[in-house]
Length: 236
Image (cartoon, rainbow, N blue to C red):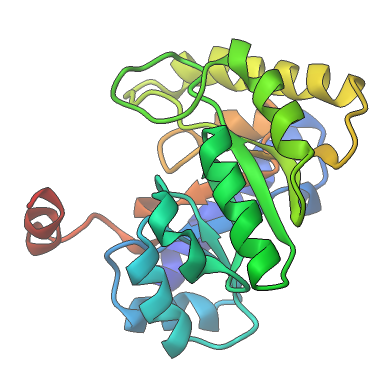
């Protein structure tokens, strides 16, 4: 199943890139493997996937120990400050930095562990109360403050668009994130580049690519729906 799904996702990414006049190499596919067993991750790995995304620190650490060392692990879920230390030297990219206090903790732990950590600023571009992330208006201030911290590097922005049955509805949000990244880039802030736009998931990644996404986070589209037991555990 995983191989067939990956083939379909790859074809869709390629088509979206062609519609947007972009090179396929501009878009990184992150396989969102939260709640999935290592056996399924190994199947994806066997198909060439090296970028995996996890929502929970403990789950990522468990899989990190069991999977090959050439994998890039992406922390895409909400991150608590007391869990940051476990990610040091293991997370390839932290997507979900949404406060200066969190950035300060990542910086402090990076200094302590003598590593450099790449981060993205998470923007709640649609202003949904149920989602983490800062507002578009606050983003530049956070970028400027976090950029001055040692041992961390701001590589771009991340957003989670609203859930919808109509992907076109989210085009406006992806476009706003792209525009925000351009505005930040123009400021030429030291230790900041906007090369990464992490946006788009299973339901809307094609629209996100058309609007400039450089990373898309696809879980269900690769691994299938979560099992009922997984949903029960998740809800507890």
